[in-house]
Amino acid sequence: MDSSDQVNKAPCNMSQGGNHIDCSVVVPLYNEALVVEELYSRLTKTMAETGLHYELVFVDDGSSDNTLDILKGIVDRDGTVVVIELRRNFGQTPALAAGFDAAKGQIIISMDGDLQHNPEEIPNFLEKIDAGYDVVSGWRKHRVDNLLMRKLPSRAANWLASKVSGVDIHDFGTTFKAYRRHVIEGLNLYGEMHRFIPALLSRSGAKIIEIPIKNIVRPKGASSYGISRTFRVVFDLITLRFLLGYITRPLHFFGRAALYCILTAFLLGAYILYDKLAYNVPISVEHGPLAGLAAILLLIGFIFVATGLIGEMISRVYFESTGKKIYSVRKVYRRETLTAN
Image (cartoon, rainbow, N blue to C red; front, side, top):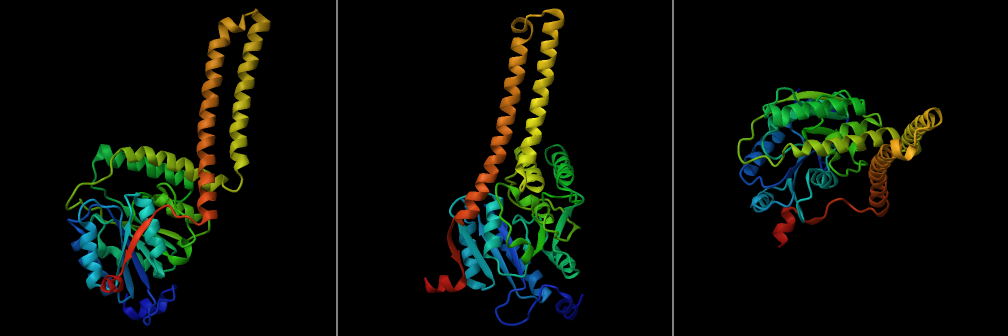
C-alpha cells in the first residue's frame, strides 16, 4: 500500500507532524550482544520505509554481557531509540511490560531480539492494523525447532491454550505481535502471561487476527529457553482459565470444586457405610487406611489449587491497588540524557 493510503486508512489517527509517534517497536533483550547491531540496523531500515514516525524501545533485561553498552552507543547516535535498563533479569513478561509502559506509539509491536523474528515482516502487521484489527499475532506456521523438545510441547500447549481461552489462533508462544495502543495500555501483565495477551484482550472484545511469519534458525548465540518452560505454561493455562472464566465470580469456581469434593466424600462414605451395615465389615480394618489416604490426598490437592488461585488474585489486588510494577527500572537512556551527562 502506498503512503497516502496508509495515512488515510489508518484508524489510529496517525500523524505526520510534531512529536506524535505512530509506532513503537518493543524488543526485550538478554545477552544479545552478538546480534543487537544487526537487529537495530534492520529495524531502522524497515521502519524508515514505512514512512511512519516511530521509536525503537529496547529493554535490557539484566544482560551479563555488553548488550547494554552497545545499546547505549546506539541511543547516543539515534534519537528514535529508547533503552530501558532493568536492575536484574526479571524475565520476558516484565521486560515487555516495561517496554509497553514506556512506548508512546499508537501502534505497539513486540518482537524477540535474537533475530528469529524477521524485522522486514513488520509491514505485514501494520497492514492488518490498517485493515481494522486491534491485535495481530504472528504464527510460526513452519517451525524449525527441535521436534521433541520444542515442536511437540509447543503444539500441545497451543492447542490447550486455544481450547481454554476460546481464541482460535495457532501460536500463542511467539512474541511477534502488533497491538493498538488503546487495547493494551490498560492491561496488567504478571507471571509469564505475555504469551496469552490475545486471550486476555479477547475479554474486552478486541478484534484479533493471525498472520504467518517466518521461523528462522537463531543466527548467533544460544537460546535461553528449554523444555522446562512447558511446565510453566501448564500453570499459566490454569491461571488463564481462572482469569477468563471466574475472575469476577470466584465462588463459582471454588464452589464447583467444593461440590466435587463433597460428592466424592459422600459416595465414599456411603460405600463404607453400606459395607459396614450389609456385611458388618470393620471400617477401621478394611477401609480406614484407604479412606484416610484418599481424603488427605484430595484435601491437599484442593488446598494447593485453591491457594495458588487465591494467590493470583491477591497479587493483582496488591499491584493494582498500590500502583507497583512487576519490574524495577534502573535508568532510561535517551540521547538528551546521555548528552547531558
